Image (cartoon, rainbow, N blue to C red):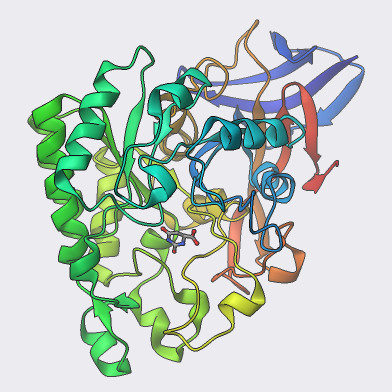
Length: 425
Ligand code: DOR
């Protein structure tokens, strides 16, 4: 049984052309005009792109299945055009052992997109002892992070990097950059808004200090380092300088850090509570500039589902985090003044390369390639409705926001998992 994507504009890292795409048995078998197939999906007026890749999803399984599961999170991903996600290890238990890696991989086999568990850098993400990184890398883990918190101990982080350099597999050490002591228990960005609202803040420097430390350690060890969800102008500037100096660093920004500021916290609504926190307008501008000039390599979602019980608390008590998988592409298309090719680079082929997934995701749309694709209607308008989310959680900060650009179809391993913006399973 073949599937045909008919009449779209194909955009990948090699360029743009108008073509049909024919899929059979999980692969692209032809790209051209006038093709036919058993199942025909209309792509008229749409962009046919490599599937998107999220470097930063919290799928909550094992341990917090009431907030999300691998299955429900992967459905959000597919609806958002993602064909692969890297699942963060701050689960319960943490993804710090072969058993938990295998568990998430097995759950991922039934998912609506590829699910690649990230491994914890330290046992239990406790920041005290290194996890069995070699064993996890042997199972296919390519990205290590203690996300949810940063590795605080300088010496331990140095050892993790040295260890990573010695592994036979090409792995990347990713960091949630926050100096815990300097965060001082703050719940939002420290600045004029935190002062006005009387909410304890955390300064931009709490992030920037760890960026400085990790860039220094990357220089010292030669390790590949990836800086997660950078949110401040100072962080972006440091990465820019480090890249010029030849440090092996990549970095991501989340959709919320280029679309929302700390002013959103004015109503004390915890839906706007996130770590790192929403920053100032100047920081948002710097993040956008970093995405535009290549300082920031990827847009990540930091999809962080939380139950209503955990989120509907006083601001100080609520869990930090926001949904992101279903809205990321549309937010980027609506908010960033960048050519579509650049937005797709930030959401597909660059993150695919960082995660070591370039063989199967983000690659050229060409005969013989794996059929992991998304079809995007760039002119479709829609309004974000939390109740319509495929997530088990509802904590999107974009309720009611009008967006332009929508995923129409998603093809994963040759299977149409989303057709006309409806998940097929
Ligand atoms: O806001 C956040 N939520 N930041 C993180 O780093 C972790 C995440 C979560 O797991 O909820």
